[in-house]
Length: 414
Image (cartoon, rainbow, N blue to C red; front, side):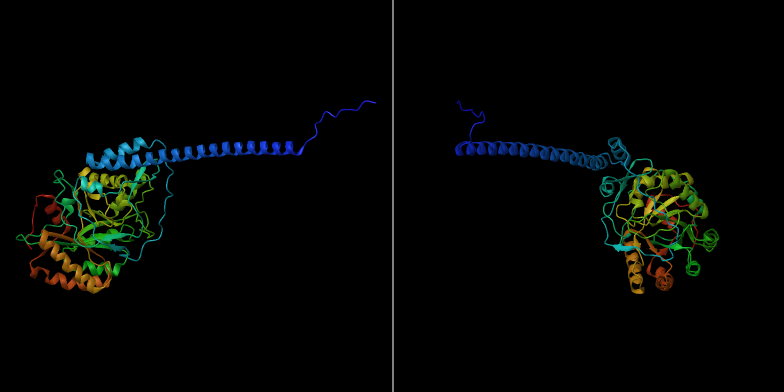
């Protein structure tokens, strides 16, 4: 009887080992291919990241080089806007509904290098592209963050500006008469944050004129208070709330970098209407907003339309105030000294002595203080004796004319 042959071959130990080796080889080859593909993908991701980084760096270099080479900010901003075809998400609008009762709550920082109009200013503006505003345009913001910054010490003069004639501007007609003197160093004392604390505001108004008094627009009786102060011989500014870098609340209807141009213009206009005898405005806080050239243009256009001036309190070394003011022919100057960031009589006394040194060295000095008890206690006696040391107290407008080379008219003999 024939034997049935099994078609399935019998497996020997040698055959089994060979098959196992062959399978392991195939698995190693597949693993190597997978690793190679993974490496290719990783390299592609790195390359893509490099392109994005280079693009971002290119935009940053574009802004920095354009601002320094062209010496005009509009060219730089326009080119950056052309590069930014996609709208960036808008920042949330911060609402400020509670007035700031505390005053002078801004931190003092070391003095920054002196600015001059031109490439030096532009190089110090901070070229970071921040979030877009509500119309999708990139907003220029200052580098870094933190609490509201003040700069102590002397900032110097504003002779670098060369604006056109301001003879027909309204600020000249509402300014106090200049003080006649014989080439004495001039000092202007500006008192901020007036209007909320009526008692201390009245104490400030009672000091000998001329002081320059800056009123907050959200003070309930700001119109009548500022009118009484002007009638007492003082010069008037609007103390416009602006967005700080830190968490401090600048107060209702402050100027914020996230607002549209229309809303910014409305807030500036409404505030100026509440202080009709103001020669112009200075910033309350504002270290973030004053570093934003696009927002500052809205402010300056309204000041130009009304024929008013801008005093930069210089709460940030990256403020664009003088640059944008020169661009739009708005008379703009900067303060020199803060008197009372530290609330002590010794500090105020020290800063008043520093103010005198600046005035003696440069011919003019602008010092900013607040209606605090310690400040008022030091300021009164100092004002009684400062002329005996060879200085003359003048309204802010007189230093504006001196620094910007504007001819004085109708000088009063005092």
